[in-house]
Amino acid sequence: MAASLTVFACLLVRLPGSWLAHERLGTSRYKVVRPASLIAPLSVVTCAVVITVGLPPARLIASLTVGGVAWFAVCQLRAERVRRRARTQRDAVAEALGLMAAELRAGILPQRALAGLAPDFPILVTASRAAELGGDVASALQLQSAAPGCELLAAVASAWSVAERAGAPLARTLDRLEASTRDDREVEREVQSGVSPARATGRLMAVLPVIGLTMGAGMGADPITLLTGTVPGALCLAAGSACACAGVAWVNRIATTAERTG
Image (cartoon, rainbow, N blue to C red; front, side):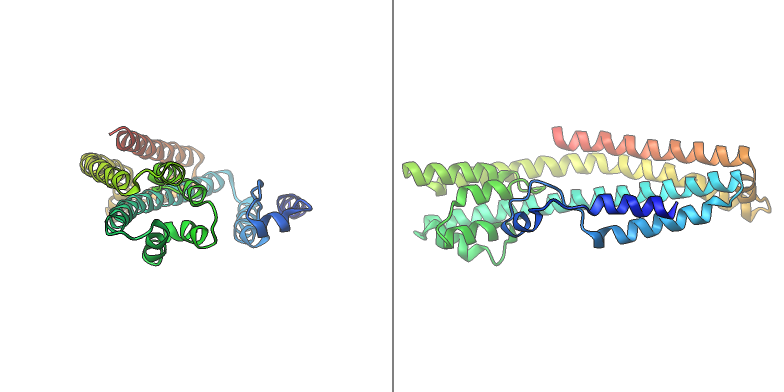
């Protein structure tokens, strides 16, 4: 088992011959798996395999169930962190557009406006550097729009390109984009206030079985031994955990769909 894991790790960290040049230039088309990022996952997998190999079937099923629930919880926490970061980025983009439009109306050049706003808005740092070096600002904004919550920068990139080629006023376009973003954020907040109780209810329903087990143990019963010491009990634990995780995932999917379409 250890040899198999070692070979698997070597296959993951195998890098193409020109990976260093692509990484330095920022033009890599491959997702490079860094060895340092594999140490923790491989250590956890190895320890889990070593620990569970000698366990009886009931304990093995219970251990796998606990590991699966822990993995599901980590995924949910990461997804929630991504959603919060996207909301924060959308607010930052709207604020940055409003300030940039105000500076353009005051007669400041777009390149100077980017340079002044970049220290307060990291989403504009790449575009600001491109403007200082005489590069393609529109391409830099288009690249930054791929980040979660920065989708509006794609429209800003198009407006910037048109303004450079045809001399169209950029401030008016930024004003309209900022107003549209504000309206979209208000709608998004209303949708979030509507779906937040559903998410909270789903999580509460998933935690209720744990509360029931705790109450049973407090009343003198021994449900933990039944669920982890017998095969039928372990199977019931696995089935119940799977249903709880599926319910939480289903509610989150419905809420996320409502947020996107709202």
